[in-house]
Image 1 (cartoon, one colour):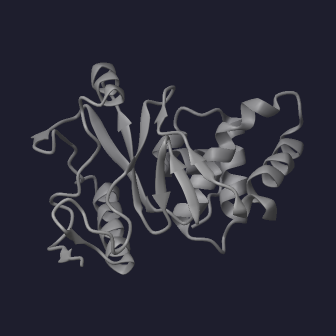
Image 2 (cartoon, one colour; image 1 turned 90 degrees about the vertical axis):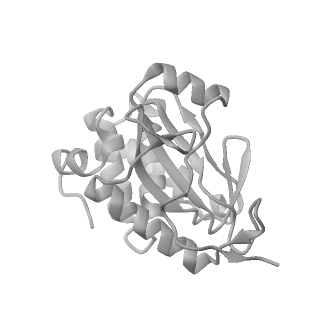
Length: 207
């Protein structure tokens, strides 16, 4: 669904609340132009473009948008690695690969098909929208130190989240931290990334 205004976008997208109006306008322009793509892909590309705005200081807004479109949407980009910064310091947002790629076994020899991953992601997104997606520390202890703000299926053929390769079809969670100590512990690896426990049904054994 397209965004009509800065206020509309800020209300519906948590990650925009700390961005400038100029950045939000770029987000809206890019998101609305990508109407033929998956919503998760539109969201990720539009957020990336919006955060790039500061690199184009001194240009008019429309010139900045045109340059951003050339950088993010030109055909030559399709064969390049799409990079997502894992720990986004200013907003204390972490992008977390959530599970194995489609048809790849996890540590228990089980896994999910791409269609099952998409169904899981859809269920998690619904819980986030309904405000009932519970964050946990160490996969067991309910916490308000961070919250799930989005989850999507990687649409890019070649993608890296930080130093980790993420395969097309692999799910990625977006978590917003509200506690500085917890944020530092997550970056140090003491607190681990989110778990899919409680979000999916029985997984299938993968040969």
